[in-house]
Amino acid sequence: MLLLVAVLVILILPLPSFLLDLLLVLSLTSAVMILMTVIFIQTAVDSTAFPMVLLVSTIAFAGLIMQGNFVIITKGATRIAEVAARFTLDALPG
Image 1 (tube, rainbow, N blue to C red):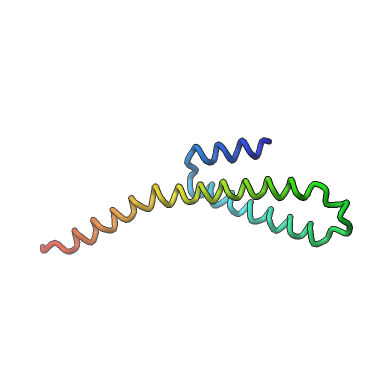
Image 2 (image 1 turned 120 degrees about the vertical axis):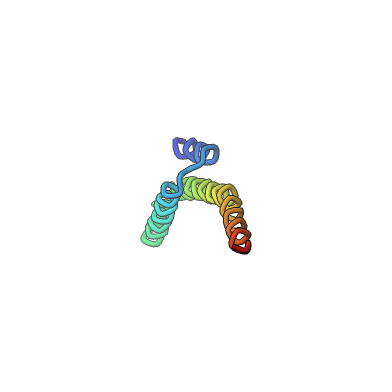
């Protein structure tokens, strides 16, 4: 439940890029840990919590992807404008 609230906060508030990178690393690490757990499970009875873990991790990863897209859309336009202005100023004589 707490993770779902955190995903909603991530979707509403913009995150700094270093924090977004850290959260993506944690998400990928948890995905590898889930994969290793599934590989080493002996019986189906041992994996009763797997559907819930898979659902929560998928929702968290989707939230991080949406936040990354938000950062690209908001900061990308600024960077494109900076580069265009630089080319325009470099093209002026003098």
